[in-house]
Image (cartoon, rainbow over all chains, first blue to last red; front, side, top):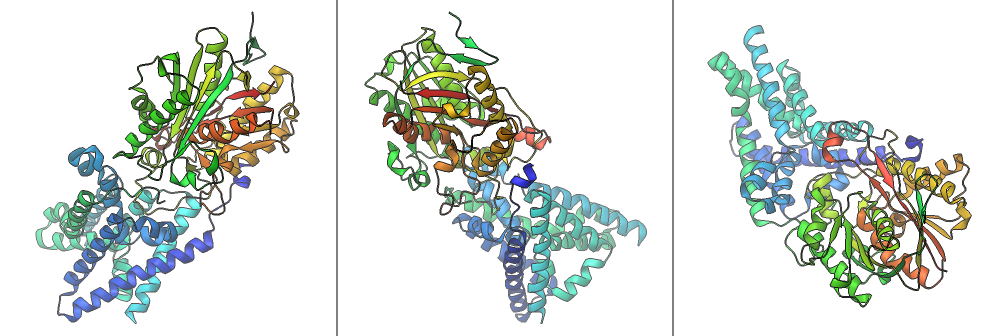
Length: 135
Length: 119
Length: 336
């Protein structure tokens, strides 16, 4: 009964928006990377610098309150790219500023992004062990 | 041509995320974790590199790409340092991105105020 | 004299009067359909303070002070203050009330706080324990998001079942003697849990609690829904409202003609992007203290059943996979 009375999100429309915004963020990333490669940067370094540029842009947009507006429209389109990770670090840091620079900003910065780092580290150790023993 | 594929593949990865949000009620934090772990493991068995070769930033910018970078970094560290690489590779690979996010996120927190009723 | 009747209701021997009320709201509520009925609309969600928590306390302080002043009373005349909010440890209320130095009962009934307070306040007055009491309930959108959901700057989508927490505080001053409108009866709700786990669908969790208290109210007082000109729930939103109508139909009570919801009155759902409707302790409190009291005084309605609804989950209970308990309290207010 609850299921019937509660409307689902408009899935198709949400997916289209996620596709367009997520795709656009990746496109911008590729443009930066191409430019860096053209400047003679090594491939791995260009990837890293591209990620850093996108992170800084996302942090700035979060700081001026625009990333949450983008997120409202784009959904996963702005959560899944690396810019969403930067937003997840910056948003709680701003919100918990009133609770102080150590236990507010310092600790709360990782309430959402922390699990990504924890599980990323766990998965990388698995991959490392696999690589060491089986390759 | 890479530009087009970056757009399409990046968009498709985000659509997968959107479907997870809309159809499973997973919270964004869980989706981020799933994507990073999935990217890392797919990269560990060598599949994700093919997607990166094909779509460039379309595979690197979404969070599975972050997992891929962790896996690549770990593999490289293991090749160079053996078992020690298992424990140093992941964090070394993520150091750049995480440090930039932390430093700029911290600075943003210092200068900006919560803006109020946005969501 | 025995004043309790039926399973869980009271009928007041000397019905207390709703003497005065004050409603203070934020800018978004001030743009809503009830904009002309509020006492104060702040242009600033921070109410001149520097954090959401302090803003909510300031709202509570101003609203309690204003309601007493409108009633022509000094704070010393108020025997008891009863109030509640949504923040941890009722801190919005506690910090707002600390300057008054009056005897204080802090209430936690989530968004049902206004109903809980008015029922208890009327019992205090009818019991002869006070001449005047003040009842408040408050909520703040940003404080509630920070407490229950995510930081505001995080780019997430709200599902269509989610509601929008009202930034506002309503206070009612109740008096043992007066010219009405009178609080004639009250039914205290029991906790009802129908197994909903989605914290973004509070209307569905609260509708069964509202149905339970309504059915018991009608049985205890031996009346039907037609007795009231208006039955108004607190913050079910449109999903919860539809569910409540179905539940009441199943129980044999027809509420289709006179059921409304404060969460649906406070915003324009078409233009204000609030998804399922308004919610929060301040939703029913501010709507009662503005629009509903005005309707009673102008005799647009003469018999009102006010049923604030609350979802009693916490962040920890949701993370631990617990279902959502809910509660509702019914307070009848009538012109004589």
